[in-house]
Length: 232
Image (cartoon, rainbow, N blue to C red; front, side, top):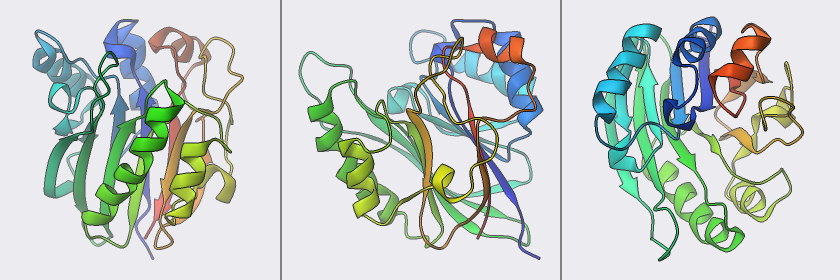
């Protein structure tokens, strides 16, 4: 029977909110892989990430300040085949964008390429970066591949369409499970956070998880997490 992988995508707003609630949310979701957006990236960021790792039982795989915010963490059972960071072309005056990447292996299970990303607030920059993100995911060389992140636009937006044109499928559309909207956490009305995957990935369910306490979800950060249960 294929191994189920639990992949959580979560914008944690640089851990500026209730970090105890944040850790409880992540533990309640029990991810094998955590794709973070807005990880701490300034002075002392490694110390803060290490504290999150201890609180959640996960370890840092790639990203953080070196990827300008995106980060990948994983559970102890996950093996890292390769990991790396990449910065995207910079638009002067805007926040620099980057990617955290990894190829992961699961005992008795799939080889999975993963990219965590946080696209721009500006539509023009999202259009410019989306094909580069898809290229990077494909370059990792694993047929089973997942892109997880804060895309800063709703489904049907230009970046969503560009990523779909490169063969990436919206996991929520394939197997909706739990809540749909991710922003803002206190009263969600938009789905700007998503998990996208290649044809080699089977989606068992994807959406805002129901396990965490609602009060923790509101206190942890300004986004809600997206949990995808997948096999490959």
